[in-house]
Length: 70
Image 1 (cartoon, rainbow, N blue to C red):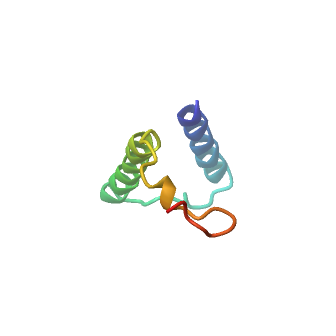
Image 2 (tube, rainbow, N blue to C red):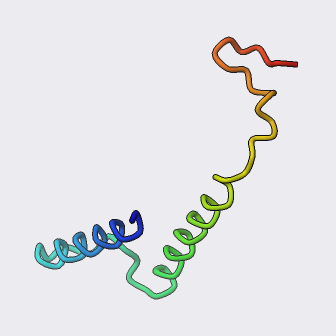
């Protein structure tokens, strides 16, 4: 759902920029566009794998008082 909304927003920004005759807020060459795609894919893949890992160092976190459980 987030991907569909992101694509819809990108399309809307592109159309608005075209109608207002202002430059697109994107790289004008293929290598720049591929860099944006690679960064987006890397962020999504990292979020997918990192978000589902068990918190193994939670006991070291201090919480509101700053005291750890050790």
